[in-house]
Amino acid sequence: MHSCYTGSGIMVDWNHILSSPGLSVSEGSLLEQAFVHRSYLNENPLFGLPSNERLEVLGDALLSFIVAEKLYEEFPDLPEGDLTEIRASLVCRDTLAELASSLRLGERLLLGHGEELNDGRSKPSNLANAMEALIGALYLEQGLDATRSFVLQQLGPHLERTKAGQMVPNYKALLQELVQGQGRPTPVYRLVEATGPDHDRHFVAEILVEEEALGRGEGKSRKAAENQAARAALARLRCDHAKR
Image (cartoon, rainbow, N blue to C red; front, side):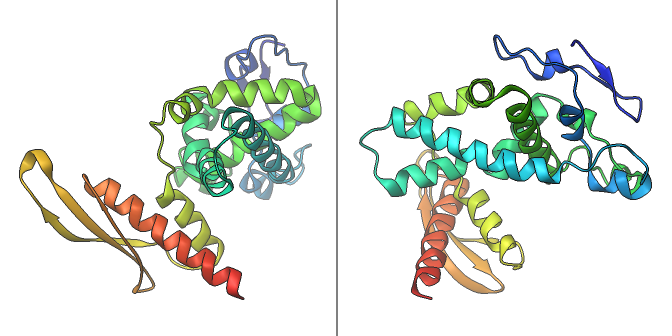
């Protein structure tokens, strides 16, 4: 299968999307379903496929398993806490949205008119959900081995940076997902201090959620300081949760 037309007339080039070596894709509704946003069905109730939400759930579980398995094999001496943080960073919304953008999945989404006008094709949440749904559809169509090959190919550069010790978990993204999952507002970062000469700056940042200071971090850049502040906040929230 080289391409197919969805119900909206958008041509889906599966060979472009699924470029993993040896991964052949047969035409089937599951792959089309991976791009059906709920808003499209609200405006097209007679469309023949359901939304991609069930596939998202399956894809999310598969993604976490495949990445955890790979990290377990590649880093035999890494403690559980570090494995968990790296895995979570690799499968977080920001990373998935980045992968989906590189595959141009946003162009293939079936969206309702309102979602289309609201930049739905570039929303990180829509892109990440489409990536998860695609992984779920691949598993059902092709099986675990083909899905693993696809996932590891897409995450290849991230995994190489991890092996080289160059990847720092995206604690800001992880924290945002956690607090939003709790129904709380987006964290706010505040620069507390910036000292030192231009060639050797030192930053201190603080993070607040609902005006409550949850963590503080330091680093050679503001971004690094904010990421460390998010790490401290994550540790605090997890500790609070464990005490309940």
